[in-house]
Image (cartoon, rainbow, N blue to C red):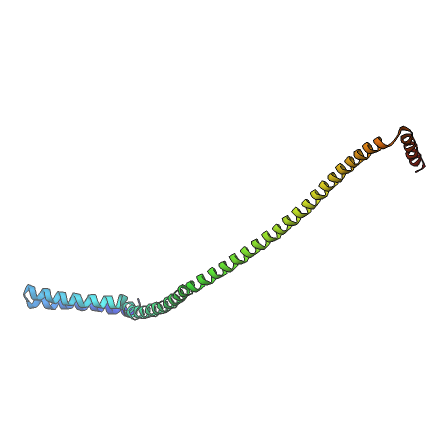
Length: 187
């Protein structure tokens, strides 16, 4: 506190003491004296409060008003932002149905593509199996034909041998063997 304020407070206290001294000699009733003391006490109290912290109090209310205004503006900005976010969320929710439909369409297309690939692969494998079966059947037919030829050759040889034995005489037989041996030795 500065010295002017201190002097003013001291002056008020002295004034109050003087008033108390003046009032008492007048022999006022106790109620009137009590009322005067209360008024003086209240005036002193207000004066002390004003000089001790009154300026701060008077500064507090306008600054508090500014704080409230700032808070209200801030709240308004927040409300606007919340409304924008709400609009964005509502748009996203509206787009969810469209996105769901797109995802389902993509899944169906991928499923169809996968189905076609599986079918094509199965057809390719079936063709390979069929081709292998044909090759296998041809090989088995060749083997069977070779067996039949070998069996037929054996039977023809047996039949020829039996026929030759019946028609060939011992001397012709020896000559045929010698002729065959000569050919084998020469080759």
